[in-house]
Image (cartoon, rainbow, N blue to C red; front, side, top):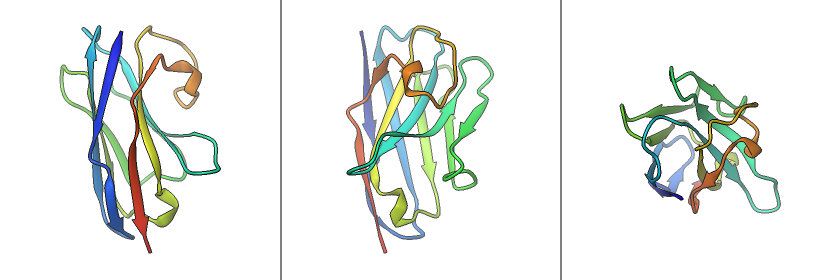
Amino acid sequence: QVQLEESGGGMVQAGGSLRLSCAASGRTFGRYAMGWFRQAPGKEREFVAAISRVIDNTYYADSVKGRFTISREKAKNTVYLQMNSLTPEDTAGYYCAIDRHYNSGSYSNEKRYDYWGQGTQVTVSS
């Protein structure tokens, strides 16, 4: 079993920045691909960013490319999402996920991931 603990959400004004953190615990010995998704009220969950297991390739949704940066703490299953130039359209619950079982497929596909965090709320005011 795997648990994901998120932190860093909150309320900011447009143009501001936040850094989200997600720490994995349990059966997480080794390296795993991890991702961030978000879901706003009335909308489906959408891909935000991901980082690959071995060489830390990064992938981003077009809506956040150039503003958000995903990174990993070296040798640990802890992932960060640095969010800059935030807009009200970024308001959502943000969820981290882990590819615990070395799955294949697109990093943007939520079906790839085996465990999910509880979510942390990000609210961006105008």
